[in-house]
Image (cartoon, rainbow, N blue to C red; front, side, top):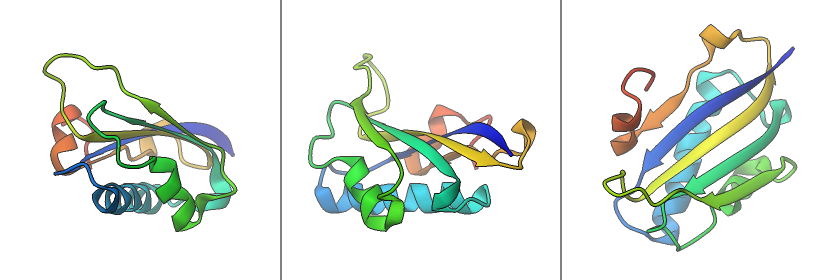
Length: 120
């Protein structure tokens, strides 16, 4: 087993608790599935949101989907002019047998524009 870091992001249409929760669950479910991970494989998860997202904490949604035993942290993304709005990003630390070249970083919806080179 090796410790790996996996990136992901998703953009939402509006800042609402319901939209954020659905997006976090979509993002994390996809990231776990594409990397053949279970909650037991996760070491920690960091979420950031752009400053225009204030309706909820992404970690609350992650706990609801069964990641309550995983250390979770939320932060605000830097407010860089011209950056993609309404975006939730994650950095997942996990233990896996996958090599670095086998990791699937997951960028969904409008967030595909952030990393077209590695978006799934």
